[in-house]
Length: 317
Length: 54
View 1 (tube, one colour):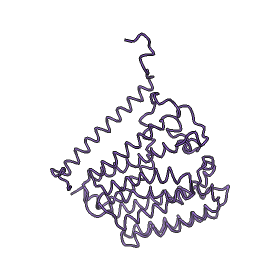
View 2 (cartoon, each protein chain N blue to C red; view 1 turned 30 degrees about the horizontal axis):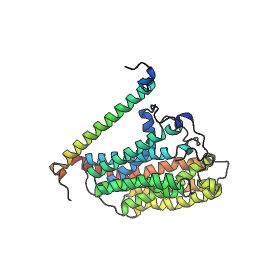
View 3 (cartoon, one colour; view 1 turned 90 degrees about the vertical axis):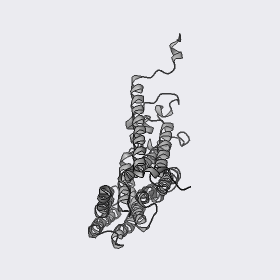
View 4 (tube, each protein chain N blue to C red; view 1 turned 45 degrees about the vertical axis):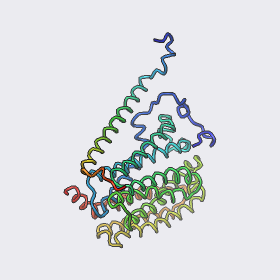
């Protein structure tokens, strides 16, 4: 990370002496773990874990979810360590603990490395090493491939980097089975293709923020119209993928109907974004908000339809 | 005992003391949780927990 070389003005506490006692509170460290992102990670991992065939003791299942949550928190902390300079320049992220000077970059780095190491080793020792290896790869992908490499170098940053957020259901599945198959890959693909329309919708009405931080998000590099075209294209790929678990016979009618109805709304909102032009941004905000509900509904119905019975049976066993 | 208060090293402010105490308690709780987790998982895995293929 370079706080100086990129010409970013940093505030006092960020460059405070190494020996100065820290004022960081527990709340600051929790904020470093990006709790909102973590909740989505835990939820999708829970679905992967619940729909997987086979059995896993409830304590082991809890351990797996805890390790996945802590691993996600570690990745968040390492992201905030590396991105402190650009976070300080963006309205959405300027109040994070490192740019605010409440946590020093070195503390965030040590915290992230410690948490990540613990999460991987504990998952490997107590559950299985396939899941642990996947968790390690996910943290590596998010921190090194996305944060350090892609985020500042290509407008395809969130397309490829989105894979990091798509791995948790596969980790949950691997925690139960010790292997992978087509079904968790489908769950991976749904999140993978959901990420670009979701983040580009946000980027459309935060373009100035990203431009100020010199992050090459698609609207900054390719412009507004190109981004809106990409959003509708990715949405048109996403919606059939959302229906695929039902089409392949992995789920029942409830999931099929949910995926079709919410998918149709996604296409409609994506189309509105495509037709909208600046300075209007209402359609982008609508798509961003609904895309969160879309992913949540797909996975929640999957959990209820496929996983809930399995979870109850495991708890009763 | 030192004659000069500068030799006493870093003197924490009340805010720094509070922050350090809250961090110490959080670390202690996390370690205790880890102990409980390993104990519970040892019970779950049974007596064969240490028998692993080489």
